[in-house]
Picture 1 (cartoon, rainbow, N blue to C red):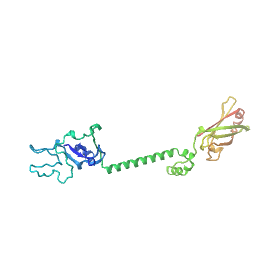
Picture 2: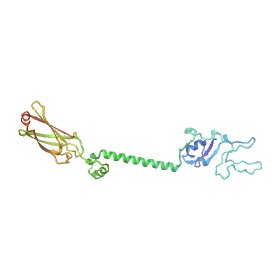
Picture 3: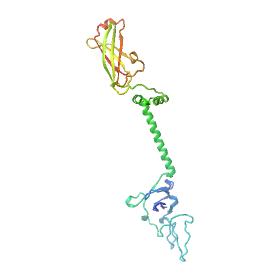
Picture 4: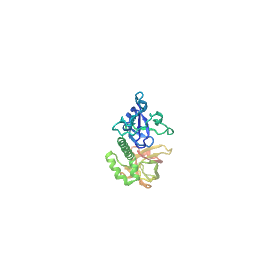
Length: 279
C-alpha cells in the first residue's frame, strides 16, 4: 500500500510506503522546504490502493462526496484534521518521486531513528565525545613532550609537575646532544700516573639542556687508545645542574691510572680525545 504525505509547511505532497516510514519512526524531511514532520499524521492512502465500488464515485481519503440531493456526505476521515486532496483520482506522476533529481521536483528524506529531540541529543553526545578525545590527546602530547614544554615555557612547570604527580613521571632537562659543543679543552700531566683534563661545554640551543657525560680516551703516538673512561656529570658538575640556554660550563677533572700499570701506560700516552654524549 502506498501513502501520500503532505508537508505541513509548504503543503507539498509526497509518495511514501509504510516500510519506509518504519525505518524512521514516521519522521521525514521535506525536500522542498526542509521541514521535519511526522508523516504518520498526514499520510493517506493513494488512489492506486483505494477500493472503489463499481459505478460509485472515485474518492480519495480526505475528500468529500456529495449525493444527488446536494447534501454533503460524511468524510471517511471524520475527526481527523486532514487537508482535502483533489477530487480527481491522484495519479502517481502528480506526486514527486522519492530520490528525484532537482529537475524532477522536490524529494522527501527519511531520517533513520529521526526523532528531532533524539537526534539533537545524539549530536550533543558526539560533540562531548569528540571534546573528551581531544583533551585526552592533548594530555598525551603534554606528557610526551613535558621536558621540552617545561624548558620552553617555565610558567607551565607547576602544571606539568602536577600532571606528572598523577602520571607518576618526572621533569628533567631536555637531552639534545646536537646542540652541545665542546668549545675547548686542555690536557696536562700532573704526575706519572695522574692527568688533568679541563674543558668548556657550550649550549647552542635557546633552551636549557641536560648536562652530558664525557668519554675520555688517552692515546699513544699512533693515536691508538690506551685508556678509555666514561665520566658522568656528577663527577664534574653539581647534581642536577643543566646547561643554561646559550650558556657555557667550564669544568675539570683529574684522571689517575692504576698503580700496577701506571708506569708502562703513562710512558706511552701522547694525546687524548673527548666526546660528549648522553648515556
